Amino acid sequence: MTRQELVHQIKTKKTFLCIGLDTDINKIPEHLRSQPDAILQFNKAIIDATKDLCVSYKINTAFYEVLGSKGWDIMEQTVHYIPSTHFKIADAKRADIGNTSSYYAKAFFETLPFDAITVAPYMGEDSIRPFLEYENKWTIILGLTSNEGSKDFEMLTIKNEKANFLYEQVLQTASKWGNENNVMFVAGATKAEEFANIRKILPNHFLLVPGIGAQGGNLKDVVQAGMNKECGLLVNASRAIIYAGNGIDFAAQASVAAEKYRNEMKIYLDSINE
Image 1 (cartoon, rainbow, N blue to C red):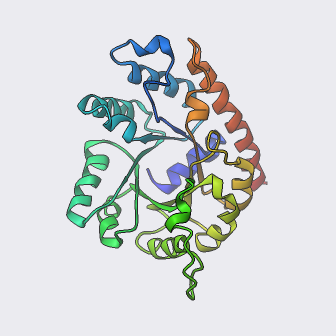
Image 2: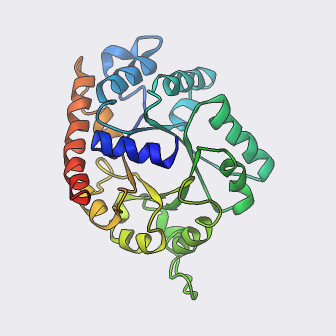
Image 3: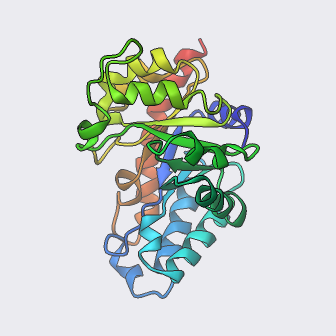
């Protein structure tokens, strides 16, 4: 998916919501758990109920890899079920020496039809380069993450002429490996106080923003400091939407939760078009 296509979807649907399909068999409604294809049934119901309210789905591969070959098959069927109009993210956090990364890229961009994959930048450019060589595919580089442990490395003070923190150096350096049409960065919603600074470094790049909802991030804070003229945000919510209900009507409850986000996002999007 190109940048223009993504922006078009955001403007058309009046939302920049990404829904995380981090499906845990222990958290889906009890009436589904005894079914042989419980996770796939759950995912399809969530997609059917929310596809008009979001522009993207993010599949955290760990929730599927833990199930072995069956889980990989569920992930493959799920990504094929997502409409082609939606931006499909493999939250896999891969990156390794070049030859290995080339196979990671092939797995998620050719074998599986994802539009984007999350990667860790700390092995340097050669570990990321194979992902960037795919046309109309996106590499989403970890920048400033939403977890507590981000302070261990990302927030280390380095105090050079270009950056005060290590994450700033990562953004500045990694942004040069690709461009605004094939590179995004992860910026956690729980670090909203840093978004104005992030936008000074990356005024035009898209940001994938996890941490809204169950992790405590605030959408308004993210938008005020992080939105640019093309929106420039994909805000992810997972548990707050997919586990909004645990009864027979779980999909309808997920739709209600997603619509609340969409309605708030519409207000923010209308403000940049005035």
